[in-house]
Image 1 (spheres, rainbow, N blue to C red):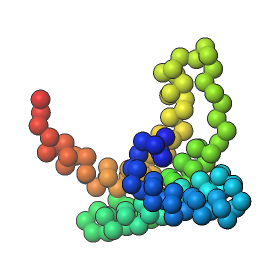
Image 2 (cartoon, helix red, strand yellow):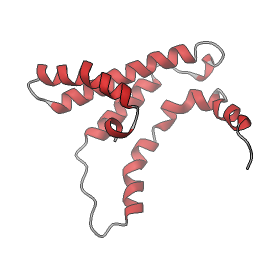
Image 3 (cartoon, rainbow, N blue to C red):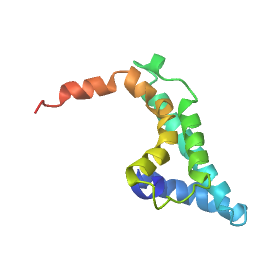
Image 4 (cartoon, rainbow, N blue to C red):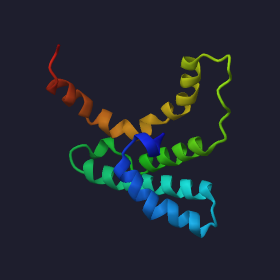
Length: 128
């Protein structure tokens, strides 16, 4: 999901700078390479959050939350998930697959929510 649909620019840089070298260094261990890529992405995002929320919204940002979010995402993505059972409705299966990641979303989004980013964006949109 992340590598094919989300932030393709960062994906390509992290893949080239972290995933491929770690995979070579570990003699083809893609699990270790993927975990290292998630860790690198977490540190990159932590750096970005530190800069973005260092002034006005510094109380909304807790150092380490974003990195923990990415570590948990790595674990969830690298777990051996079973295939969808044939008799399971797609909506139920989608909910079960997305639920673990949604439980940790607050670690990523907390500064945005507490800092009022979404409220400010809502005031800028037109009511239709």
